[in-house]
Length: 153
Image (tube, rainbow, N blue to C red; front, side):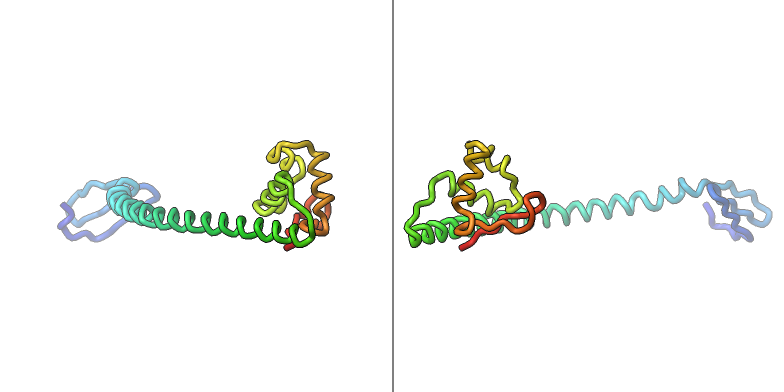
């Protein structure tokens, strides 16, 4: 409908007025105009990005599964090496100590209370087991609050 020649275009914050020579052209709201132009483009971009997310989501899930398998495999290797070390020292690692070491491998910052809850023994027993393994299998780096455990292989 705007096929006529106009001489002036006045844009205010919410309205756009067109003044044509000899004709009265109705004004239109810029926010409505912008919505009519941009919403379809935005919707199209969102659909494209949703398709990309779906494709990449499958790849991320595959990578996550691969990483989880490697981590589980490495945990098994570390646990096996710790058992070999214990055998070389003439000691045996109890089930509780193995569980403690596995939890420390998963989270080096794990507090003793969480170890006690996960292993199913008291915090005092956790303390005794850690003291028995300290220097041989475990090393504390940093202070009691804020430090972390290292596995010694």
